[in-house]
Image (cartoon, rainbow, N blue to C red; front, side):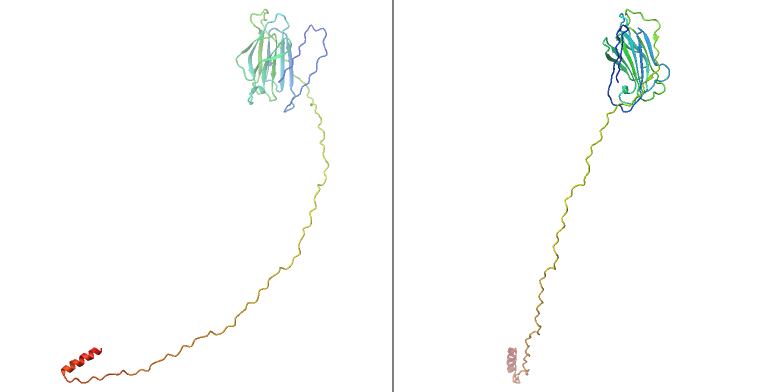
Length: 273
């Protein structure tokens, strides 16, 4: 977010021709942001936006309070209430936010504080310079029911030489003015240069060389040699020789003559066996 504030003194007798500013940035969506800018030189006042209903989306609204009196003292700013939409981002200030800037004599801004969530009890920012800026930014999401914006009171610090009025003057917020959206200027992209396509060069594949086929050489198998078969030689078995059988010769036994002779003969016979 950025805030640009331009002030001009009422005693400027030689006004210039103004200024021109340009900037660059990236955006995810081309949005038609509504701008509201308000100025007040009152010592004391009240700012309430939008006053009725819910605030608008895609809004950038600023209020410049610049007291030109030489006796102006520092100012207290009291935020009495702030109702914003709930934000799902880790940093709620990327959704809707109210910021307070202090402006020095050279017109330079310094951020004093910012509010990015609901405020139900008054919060006071003390001892601001005599010139300060309120800036209210909203994202492109439509504010839900109950997002009623903010209410602020500002008044001199107690003990200053100025006397605040009994009833604060309320600066009504004007209807937002819409700046017509224009397409951003784009640098034309040059046409890409292309190299004409040519057929790739190919190396011819040589024809394969083949060796003529010949019958394989074979070694002739010799005919087997056979030995004529002959009957085995046998040794004739001689006929067995037999001895003709003859009756055994027997010695005739003489008749015993006596007993003694019988016994002798018996012993002889026994000795033969």
